[in-house]
Amino acid sequence: MIYHVTYRNDERIGGPAGLFVTDGGPGNAILWDHRSREWAFDPGLVVRFVNDHRNVDRFDTVDRTTAERVAEVVTGGAVLPGEEEIRSMFPSGVDDGARPSSGQR
Image (cartoon, rainbow, N blue to C red; front, side, top):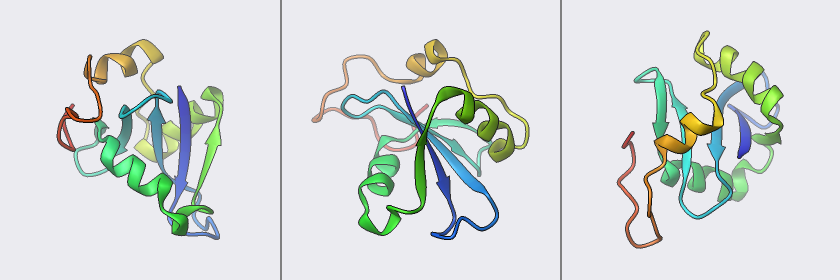
C-alpha cells in the first residue's frame, strides 16, 4: 500500500487535510471523504490530484505508521483501516476499461 498525506496549500499551513491510500496498481484508491465521514473508493479523484503538477507540493508519501497518526487527525478520530480491510474496499477484477464510478464503496 502507498499512503499519501494531502495538504490544503503549498505552505502546508494548518497541517494535513486528507489521506489517500493506493495499492500501487492500476485504479485502486481510497480516501477519507469529509462529507460522508467515511473511507471511500475514489481512484479518479486520487489520480487527478496526485498527477496534477499544481499539487506537487501539496502531498507527501508516508509510511503506514505516519498514515495511521494522520488518519486520526484528518478524520476526527476514525482509525485507518487495516490493509486487508482496505483491499476489501477495492473491487476485484477491475481493469482500465471497467472501473466503477467515483464514490463507490
